[in-house]
Length: 325
Ligand code: DP6
Image (tube, rainbow, N blue to C red):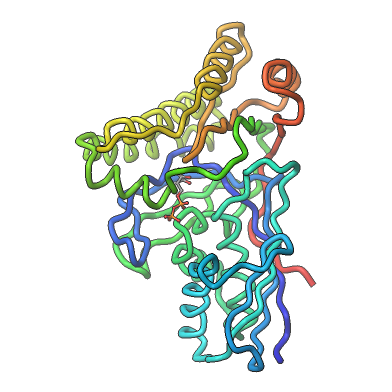
């Protein structure tokens, strides 16, 4: 048996979204994207390759996955085995650290941690760019979770050219992201399915590509200049335009629920009352609210009053992948 390796990776929230693949097998995106890695939500994954195993064994939060549930992990381990010229199966133990049963566990932290632990356990020594490329093969957003802080995913055009690049890893800008949990259940339309649907059926998709190019050009200098208003306006409009792709797909669908719309109104009214804050949301109804550290308390209080204290979680910029002993 070989050494067991444990890696920790944090989730990230996209400020300029990835929503569509150019290559579904290699997970090459249609556009670049940009995210902020968060400190509060992370995955610890331990991998050991063991020649006595007859199949890969995968558990998440202590529950053993069936072969069918573990298909993506198994396929990912095949890639690692191929790169490392190995044949033995692996035991994978993954634990998601999320403050409440909030449904905020993500494929980004899961595949970034798996990429780190599995590659090392297989004897590969990958630098962070190579790790980012490997994580990408599990889930696109995992590409960015190898790095901390603000991270750009360069779309590239093939396996070698598509990876994450840190824009600013150590963020000393006092900002926060408040996660508002409105429904902890699993989404009905997965990101994978949803984005593919948008690429193939939304007539707005060509416009989305231009929007992302413009938003990346606007947000990068704004982050470096700590221009909170430009960053906020860009991330909120980018999120709404991504969700417009779901509404304009055929058949149309939406990740919003009634509370999502009410929460958007609350953010707007806070902003109108002088508290600067902007929302974004991914393939689900839960909002992430971007704000300055000094404004966390009034926003938190207002959201707790409306949606319950337990559904409001405050996060800050988080680190890149770490290996634990
Ligand atoms: C809305 O990374 O989950 O969160 O590559 O198919 O695994 P796959 O998709 P995934 O999609 C994330 C979509 C998003 C936006 C983003 O994180 O950029």
